[in-house]
Length: 409
Image 1 (cartoon, rainbow, N blue to C red):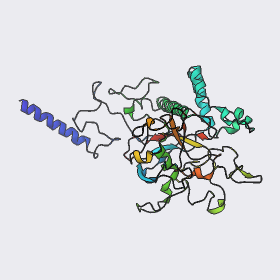
Image 2: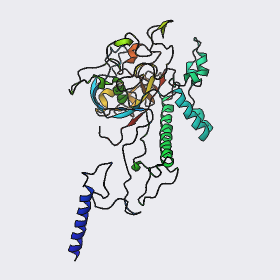
Image 3: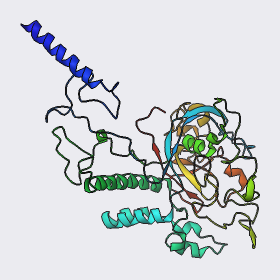
Image 4: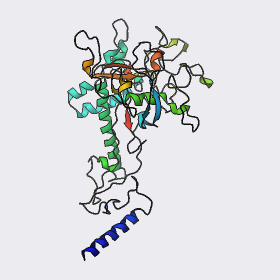
């Protein structure tokens, strides 16, 4: 009798699995009603394992998809500082998302608004950008100290005066804000219960955060890694004109050509980025301004690169996740390279105690891209500089990135 019982169970399980696979092999978006491992029905009752509905979800606000692949990272310019800290090497970067533009003043003011309403006063104070970064003893930049962050005309100019630490805090807030807004829309917009259906099909309580397993929580916004940033700035996708897998071209800047002016069409001769042309020349001559901006510029100014990203060269430098080490090109992996700490290159290797012969430690972060105050050399994606993570200037901003969740590319 026991044998018959077991055989019956096996037959039933086989039928269930067959039914599960009628529409083809199970996938993330169509896992079937029964487990392909045990034959148990998903969500049969309160005790059963439940598999929430999952479909392709819209990408996060402000983000552009960056298709990953193989590339050669590193400086193509003459190493004028003799640092030899970004020697060329071949790596692969997985697909990810990146902000279309730099984070702007209006975005930071929204952040401050939420903190002022919901956080302790000291948290709000800690999030305030250092507007005194505009102040120079021998320069009359005083109006920017007062007006650059808050005056409406500067709303969509890149936020500056923010440290690496402050930029990371913004990413944490943005993640929570976006997911809370998505949950609110889903629960109140005719799609109630979409985020957190339970095993017995009971809806989640209003305001309850959806789980990661639901598939309706966006991954964290974060700073891009140095490799991601450099890969996105190169935008080599625009040089692949055929099915050929070989990389036959490289770019000195985030656009075609070996000059900083547009080589094509009706815009020929116009500058492709906001940078300092030469000593004392920030914008050119009245009536024929070259890059058109004496300080920062509108975040959508200048043509986007072939990924659709604006100002990946010039306007403001941008913080990335990595701590700075001069030998990162030797140490890090060749798939999604990233340096999170001093592993293999400890702080003790550098004389940063008395005399400050070296500024390298685990609190120093990389920034990339060149700014309105930099010469063209720094516009090349392979160049890199570093600064203490709690410091800020009028030339450094940032943009956010996000993993391409649920994908192996």
